[in-house]
Image 1 (spheres, rainbow, N blue to C red):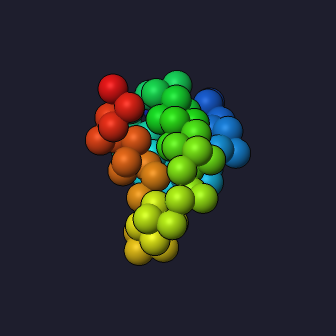
Image 2 (tube, rainbow, N blue to C red):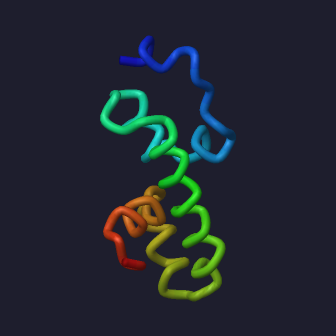
Length: 75
């Protein structure tokens, strides 16, 4: 499905977030949605990464922030 998205280029934020990038590359979500989710994950990281509990979780799972964002903890 990558060829379907070949005319669209992901931002550096999405390229750095392999969790959401894989969904976009598989054609599961649009580029716009993947970008939105990658930015949401980045905002969570910026907000909570100084907390020791969250830092420990991040060290255990490199996709922690993306999975936390996907859980809709903010909703």
